[in-house]
Image 1 (cartoon, rainbow, N blue to C red):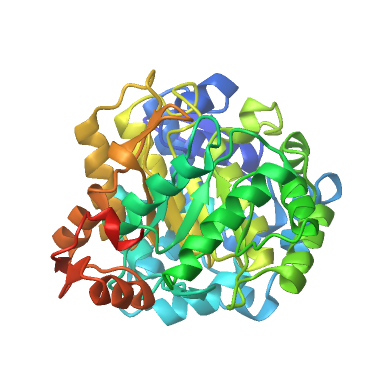
Image 2 (image 1 turned 180 degrees about the horizontal axis):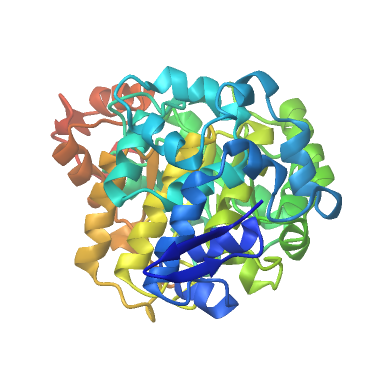
Length: 453
């Protein structure tokens, strides 16, 4: 396979599909750090020209981490839907982009093709698309999932209430949760990042949240984002658990750094099916983020966007209720500034939805990244317009435990009103019945924490 292009008399050669994918990627500080990015703007154009001519079949034959070396590659390949794959295998990446953007390529069509796509296919076409292209296709991809309510329906924008506390004080967590619910947030999940990763602390937080939600008939889910082994032990203590969480990496080695494997994830999924308290069929929650594999030296010389897509390929195995890219959290070593973080958020949302996942995004930045509050607010609106299933929500958008900027309790109703969107149908009805909202607008008890005493 000849991977080369000539521009203005200069011939650009690429030694492998993996190298080609890296050189075709938009500028990212993480790819620069890893030495896989294009060495000039012209080389980037050349790489994209070559990539546009590859077929999806050729991409399947050349995963960035070989089948024999990586269990994630094997998990994707062994579970690929051959009928869905054959429908698009003949297309070049350039043709695939055009097909995705066609008005006749509807959401149901995209959903039928998703099981036949490998992560490398999603990553490749992503590199040829503009931000508006990513939003246009992302908005068409409909992924509907069910736990205790229904996520991903058209015209809906959900949120995770993130009531973190620096000492895991249960009353502090509940106070923050009540505030979020009073602003109409939390229909995706009440999800706590614990300061203490222990089964006892995980169980105590879940029991306290569960009692409040049940007492007030709040139609949502709860989750404590401790390590998956910790959550399994918490289940043994008999606590309620609606969703089980784990961070994912884009290679077997990256997941080993997280202390997980496909075998462990399989066990957790089976355990949740047996012991979880969720009414619906979707019981898992995964978080990802460009740069995680590079930060653990587990990237195998591949670019961070392609490795991010591979996270989604693994997540698809477990039919999750939530997948969330924490897009600016790892830091400027991987996404340096507002434009890079914005681009990555739209990329991740597009790739996840294209591969059939219910994608949300933590539109965020760490304090040493070069991103302004205005840029962050713009990204939230772009994601909402692109059909993002859910965003984060926390007091004034400032996480006092993790120390980064995200989405506030006030931002969620503002973005919903701007875009004409509402929460999940079940949660929407709950808010209306309690006066938090009225006809989708703020109601007489909007922001009143006395609604959930």
